[in-house]
Image (cartoon, rainbow, N blue to C red; front, side, top):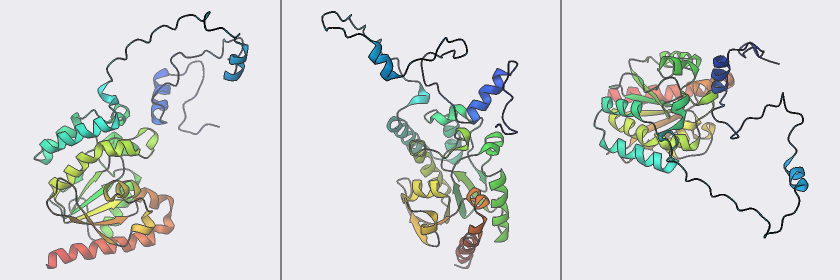
Length: 287
C-alpha cells in the first residue's frame, strides 16, 4: 500500500521524481556494482549456496590465475573515514575566531557525507548575544528547505514552549548537533555527530552562553557523553565544558519537541524543565 506522499509507479513515471523519493527515504547508495533486470531475466539468480554446489571442483594446478585487483582510487572528500574527517573538523575549528568565520567554514565543509543528500546547510537562528543557547538534534524536512533550525512542526512547538516562559527567538540562540538533514529524517549516526562535534564545540565556545539547553537524546549523549535516557537525566543542572572553552557553562537537559509531539504525556515533565530554565535565567538578572 502506498501513502499519499509516494510516487505513482508505472511505465510513465518521472525518473527524477523517483530518484528524489529514494533520497528522501534514505536510499543513498547502490548495493551491487551491476543492476539486475529481473523483468527480462529467464530465472532469478540461484542462492549463493546452490551456485557453489553447481560449480565443479577444480584442482589447484588447474585453477586459472586470479587477476590482480586494480589499485584503489583516492577517496572522495565526501567519504572521509570518520577519524580523518573528525580530525579535519577539529583542525578547522582551532583556526576559527568568530561566528562569521565558523558559519563560512561549516558551509564549506565537505567531511560529513550527509551533506551530499541535504538541500541546505542549517547553521543557526536567534540571537547570538542571548544568555540561553539551545542545541537540538538534526535538521528535518522543513529545516532542510528553509535553512533554519526548528522551523517545522517541532519548531512551532518550541516557539510556544519558549513563549510560555517569556522567551522568543530574539532572546535565545538555536543550533543543532549536525548541520545537515540526514536522509529520510533518520537520527544522525554516532560517526556523523563525531565529525560535526568539533564545529559544534567551537560554536558553543564562541557564543559563550550563560545557559546551555540540550534538547533531545542525540544532543545530550553527544555533548554530555551520557547514554542514559532523557527521563533519567532531566531535572538536574550539569556543567558543560570543551577544549575550546575557558570556563564551564551550566547545562539543562530536556525532551526534544518532536518527541513531545509523539508523546504528549511527557509535556508535564517538559513544563517543569521550562520552569527550571526560567528560574535559572531570572537568577542571572538578579545577580
